[in-house]
Length: 301
Image (cartoon, rainbow, N blue to C red; front, side, top):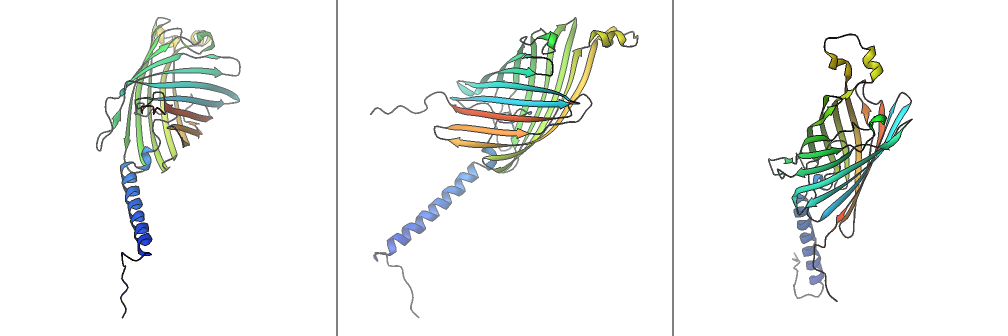
């Protein structure tokens, strides 16, 4: 029997050995890469209705455009919402602002503008969720006569948690409260809960399920207040309480371009679950994320 040997001095052996070595190195590198960065980490902080608990990394700015459209019994409401997120020296602190503009069947105009501060209180670990509480000032930019605001400075606290629970699945949870003080001698309290599950089909393509609910107080229409039956509690005739709940399946896709530019686009189909909710809607999302400071020293030619 003739035994085949690989002679290292044979001129044809070197390419074969090099190819095998290269294949082993590439496979090892890919295994290391994907074990360190699971597909679930490919897209983060790009949800639609539920806030994810990930602040911007140092030197990275994010521009977000949301376009929700809601339809109820022949009526429609379309909004254009612009948000910009900036880290404050590190990922621990983040400032952002949100400017919404709304079109309805009879009116259009700016709603209240949000000025947001978010603290990265917990970084995500093996057993620890990410936690980034947010405090917002709600400026009275909206016209109260159009039902686009309350003509009062408002406040919001939101508590978002996020956790990657497997290589491909991320869970998010939100709980928050709004306060508009002294609106027609009433303090208006609003509450919200939300949760989502995100499945990373690939690092650049995610499927999403989101659910949100908002308990809201508002000053009732004067005609409705007068038509209300008599009661010993006069404030009950002047305060309108609603519960809005949405279930929203959606998807998002990331384009990772040169110079660390990431563009994320997405869409969802929200469905109303209560009588106070819109019947259904469409939601479009677009985000641009890129460095705003030079991370490497410029090379002088």
